[in-house]
Image (cartoon, rainbow over all chains, first blue to last red):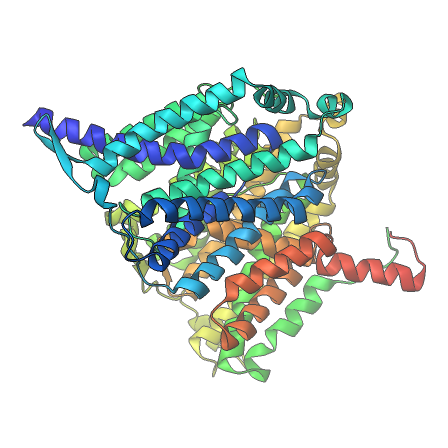
Length: 293
Length: 322
């Protein structure tokens, strides 16, 4: 009995973790390359969720609608990311962090209201795609197929990301941009394009994770500012700029939250923020990151 | 250095003090909101503009001040003269401990750690039902005993909220005067040196972290005073006050007014509270307007309102800045 409970907490924590990984990986990527903390990442995630619902509504009677809507949502958010980077963000690279932070916060305010204007303030929910609507029994617990699908997608994306970063020419450029962007620029690489590309990929994953979470959580205004703080925690624990760090950071976060609720119900929120603070104090570059020079 | 210095604090105080007589009850409400926000924003600007530290968790100190004062006055029924200084002391102690860790980090890591501390405060306020009222908050915080004000000629027939407004205006004016002295003192000059070039400051023998920590504690303490007044003014303290987005709001006030000037943040507070009031009459999409204002500021007027006026003044007068 106790084992079943522990296992179901463990699985719950893992599902939370994989979603957070999807969201936080983009945040971490942008930080690693551009040294920018993007508050609007949560807004991209929220727009992904709303756009997925919108896509479903347009495609309504069609069975495969969820997957197309998801792709549509992620692509639209990526496009928005491209516009934001090219039109605005670009001119802030040389400025102080304060201006960059506040710019991304201005986006949070604006996009939050745009979502309210377009989709209202009520709760919206999306049903699970029929192909994944069942559930199976593992160790006496019922696990929805959809959650298992999410559990599989997280490591898959982490692995693909690692492959691209470490085994391809593009990945080498990105890593070079992380280390020394001026030198890369001097060597004739087009750093501007790399930045736009990183921002677009990061927005794509934010939109994708927003779309994918809709069958599990209903879409509400305010989900943007709630998720962004969680994503910050994950990125800080793992190490800003490190992909595997973000992965393990998510796993740690998910488990601390999940078992924290079991042990001290009212202090699980406290414990994750405390964990973030402790890591920043002891090892500001995170468990898996490298110190910045 | 300009030869003659206008006593702005006194002038603003005197003008603001007439509001209960010349304005409506609602005007007094707005004026008090502006005054408290002004103190809060000036305290943040000691870090942001003077010392060059981007704190994304300044609301934590505002919140600690509000909760300490509120809990002492409501739950323990202590008088304001005890609760208010205790709120300052409590906030200073918390700022000392959290700041000790924060100032050891640079730039974005500093911002993240301040954010983490403020969310820790939020999580505690939100969940510690016995002490803070949890998500229900702490409603009905009593007004301080202001009977003595009634014996002052001219103030006797004012309502209690008008009396509290005048009373807090005095406290805020004193706090602003103290903060202004701090910014213009040799200590304040060292903070500006650190902002401009920390390495060079360290080379000439300045203990950079100690100065940053001192600025952090002073800024936190005055934010705590602002919070304590706000709790009484709004008749309650709620966990929402401590959520991280409030830190961004006060930061926008400081920047809207102009971080490079002592009177920038109060001007920003005035502009933002007034705008909020005008715009929420027309539309519910205040955040959208705020975000747009912020965009315009960042791209077109990074110096804020006071910075813009100052630049215009210099251009028309052809006079150099002091």
